[in-house]
Amino acid sequence: MRHRWHVHNHFTLLPESKRFLPAMFTAIEQAQHYVLVELYLMESGDLADRFIDALIQAAHRGVCVALLLDGYGAMGLSSADRRRLHAGGVALRFFNPLGFHSLARNLSRDHRKILVVDGDSAFIGGFGAVDAFLSAWYEIAVRAEGPVVADWETLFRQLWASRLTRDYDSDTPAMTLPASREQAQRPMGEMRGRAMAGRGYRYQAIRRSLHKRVDSTSQRLWLCTPYFVPTFTLRRRLAKAARRGVDVRLLLPGRLHDHPGVRYAGQRFYHALLKAGVRIYEFQPTFIHAKFVLADTWSSIGSCNFDHWNLHWNLEANQEVDDPYFAEEVRDLFQRNFATSAEVDAAAWAARPWAQRAKEWLFGTLDGWVTRLK
Image (tube, rainbow, N blue to C red; front, side, top):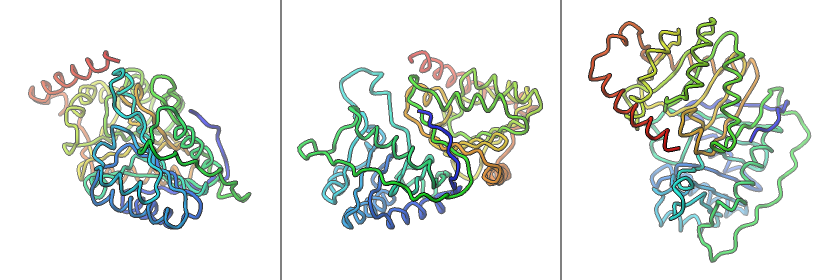
């Protein structure tokens, strides 16, 4: 779903878990009315324990706490943790639990990551409540304040009430969420932004928005994604932008990757993109799980990987910001990450060994099969 642009917002870029996790926990601790959390990944462990403790403490203060998890992404959350949340007063629902129905329905997942507190602030990004986000994976988030928060809250409430969600305890009456709070009529800032959501092949507003920016950008187009298996249309647009003189760069994972096969499948596109003038950087310190884009003064941060799978099956959510000062922050973040990455040399890549080419062919073929299954 695409919401309209709002002005008078303030957006705070929160790179790395050491920035966004404390900010999120502080917001939950200060909540007075309601906390709405929507996550894809939640697995029992240290970080999940911290989230559960914070949510239960808020519920004990009389705050309405609603936690919506994906039925597949939360399979690693133990029964004991689910019972603890329920007993602690947290309303727990699951999106599309796996079942004996159609394969297509099981493949449709809620990949969004949203936290809304009291209708005053929202956090959007690629985060999850799994221990990998504490140190092993590099991730970023953005905090939104201002009128755009109401759109994020609306997205959560619509899915919470959807027939595709199921309560943890069907014997307990489902919690009714409190009414949305009216925001104080005061400008939070002067930043222009909008909430952008996608619903698989049925509604691909995020993809169309990116394509429009790629086609219209005049100076730079920098894109970071952990699972680089782009559609033909996006590859063609990136190459075309580079040929017309736009500074097109890709920030992608290096050897540290949670799905190495996906990396090989995407590397089969390197040669054509490098030939067109696209610069490719592979991040070295850790696995980079972040998804963010910068096109001139426009930026997009959120959950969407811009690959075949995400665009066809998943519910996704990105915060778009069109502001020159925020764009400078995103640009600086990219440049810091480029500095700790290895740039792929076109000549060296053209001479890569056959073992590498074989992996690209093998996993590229598998990706092609998966794509045709759609």
